[in-house]
Length: 219
Ligand SMILES: [Zn+2]
Image 1 (tube, rainbow, N blue to C red):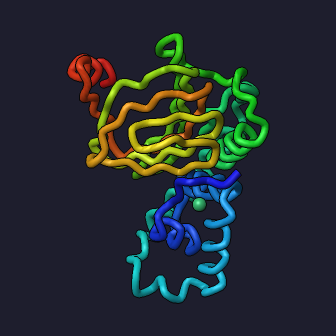
Image 2 (cartoon, helix red, strand yellow; image 1 turned 90 degrees about the vertical axis):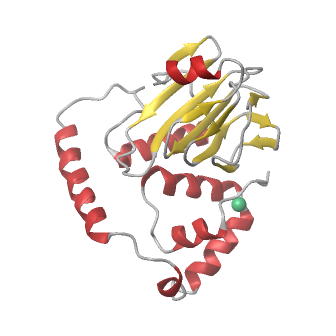
């Protein structure tokens, strides 16, 4: 199955140059597993050795990321002393989190995870993404569930891990990578039991009839 929704060329460029970290990097990686087109583009970019990058993209603050890597490393050593339940996907250890997400993507087994059920058809798990820019969540929407209409204050990037959902702009299946921001208002509906990995820079803003109530409720 080929994906129909891809990361932008800018994101693929950043990925190839090793400028994406954490959950976002993993999302591009998992997208590629389903997408020969992006695999090909990334291979081309990597073979260019990132030479075009120096002029095009401002390097990210390397010192900051080196610092947070060091802190992560120290955190990990602390975490090893605490035992984590097997079904707890929300690991503080970014490597372990990444392995668990990849396992979910591969096996499609999700029932034993530590879902926080918000309604009968909607659950989520907040992930410790250790990321300065994005908040990360796993979202479970059961077949037929309509997510209240909303737009985005910041950017929202979604990777479909399992099942499918649709909105006014299309149908999204496993491996699809979807970018939305304040220009898009949509109401996602689950076509089948659907799990998405989503990263956001800011809160959603609900716009439907119950918008004001939901905006207050989600704070
Ligand atoms: Zn692609």
